Image 1: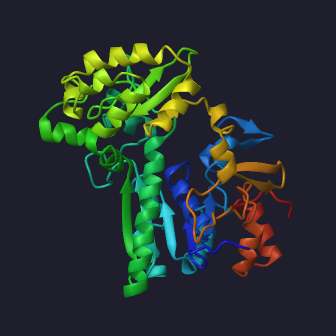
Image 2: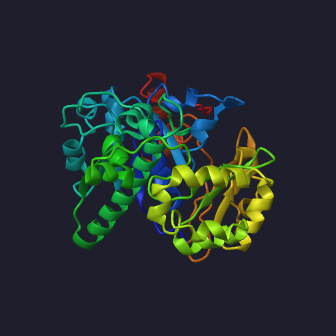
Length: 401
């Protein structure tokens, strides 16, 4: 039985590249929207990012499934004519050009709106284009630095970067959420929308209670490794086999359960540790005690016993262990998609269920300009016209003509 996809019939023109925009449009594609990915003649930057499998970038393939790729040179008037035809038939447009570039290419909001008045136009930038930083370039690395994240995580004195492009992903999610809200509003009112989503704004917003601790108290949260500024114990502990367990005690009842599990009820009754504020205040005394206790048994022992007592616990996995975990296998978080060059390739499946079913990818991540010819045919171009456009560098494709 095919999964019902709520965005069937919605068409998205994706002029974005790299990560935040492509991640947003991949979400919409997973939910059923038709995504037309417009690439410049040199292709999406991520096509060149390592590692590669038989010439295909793993990074690119992680964010571009359920899309059709067309290569268009927007600097050529004939390329802009093609884009205008695509805009007429699109519900949503995504772009993340540097400040002023969209206007030069004739795909800024005012120009697009003249072609389709009710368009939902989503711009993604590093900073608000009208701000003092509007002309600056931005990458997830610099946003992690400027948000305070890199100064509030890790243990060493040096800044620590989260291992993946966290704020690009969050920005993509915020963009998808806002576009869905705009689609709902358009359904009610018939009006389009101009949406601006920026990495820096999203970063500070998504850090939530960390900046709020500073704003409300004036205290700058310090680096605490895996620990939490507001809850104790809430961190990873090393075990006798060298593995780690992450233990999160949300309330005083769970604290008592933890003490029962480790056979130390005296700690639960100790006035220094009885309530969470007590434990936060005296973490410098409590944590060394717990560290010694967890070093007495192996990781799996602690996972089993703490789960038995209803304590929030999880093993600290290496990435290879993640995909050996029974839960990950049983619920099917990895699915396979047929790729014309690579055969079946793994994809991380959409995390939600709709009427009990997970939306599965219907299209592999497209090769460079894989759908250029088909899309131009749909727009009414003849094969002779298409060959001429390819020869003149107005459009591109990796497919045989």
